[in-house]
Length: 338
Image (cartoon, rainbow, N blue to C red; front, side, top):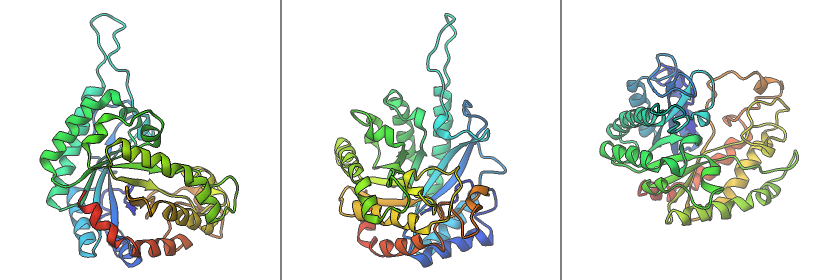
């Protein structure tokens, strides 16, 4: 389960925040991707920092990690770079080495990666002292994921291993893994690779589980090939989800539309994905997007019949999750020994 996306300072230590841990445990959740926002001013900023509004304090993280562990859940700490101008982190990007005027060279990627490394090291030390079972060093930094940044990422991974002794992963965009001839070489330095998996599972509203499985089937072979290309590296769905929205499985990542509440659409998507990937030995599981909604999106509340967002607590998909989490126990030990 993904938890805490864009949670504001104070939430993890609040009674409501801590109560969510118990609700997840009661549902049978076994692993949690615990997110913390690392901010930069704009999509073209080169310096990251902890923000007094959007970044939870370290002691909050320590407290809620202890709560997760006490309830028997494993934790993947996942710092997420966010832009205060509202841009998606995948748009972060710069010209690289331009020199239109002789002697004046644009160097933005180097200071950006240096700032990223400082952030990753900080939270790596926190993950180490709180015994987090896995550490995700980045997510959907699309413009920064390519092979042209191999050396920069290798420095980040090397620095991370000096402060954190557990398995390290990165949550990549699908095009980085699945659309090129080879995944970027720097991914081989990780212990597992994550992918944000929001593959279309339907062509029309009301698709059954079987119809969704047929639509998703080609992605199994493509991701199996990614694992093989990376030397048999395990693959995890660092994010995956579908809204409880009529026809939501046509474009599962879409968050801006309004429509009719349809809990079956979400439940069918989760069921189809699990049935397809469960037999694959290279697939270690998924983090559902998401447990909690930290923003009020009016379009999620346009139908009085129910919320149409990604959360599943209290919806039909929660029971699907409960069944599959109950089957996860044998696989979890494998995750811990990546």
